[in-house]
Length: 75
Image 1 (cartoon, rainbow, N blue to C red):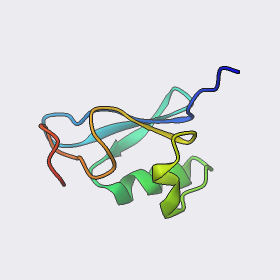
Image 2 (cartoon, rainbow, N blue to C red; image 1 turned 135 degrees about the vertical axis):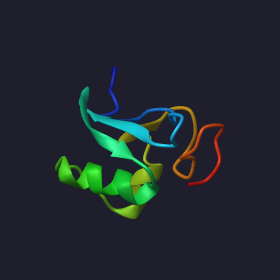
Image 3 (cartoon, helix red, strand yellow; image 1 turned 135 degrees about the horizontal axis):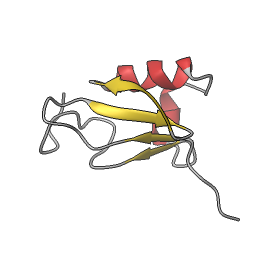
Image 4 (cartoon, one colour; image 1 turned 90 degrees about the horizontal axis):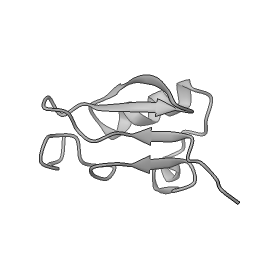
């Protein structure tokens, strides 16, 4: 079965923000893990804290949940 991850958090941009897409539609730019959770919740998907570690819900590209600046630093 070929499953797609509904949420993609893209690599950090120069200003540290990360584009967030839900089902291929851009829903905003996150500057922190809390922003990601707000965007996920606003899109009608579960936004509990454990969801950020769920690879079936969120695909993190170019860094994990705490990487929000160019070069992978914490934001």
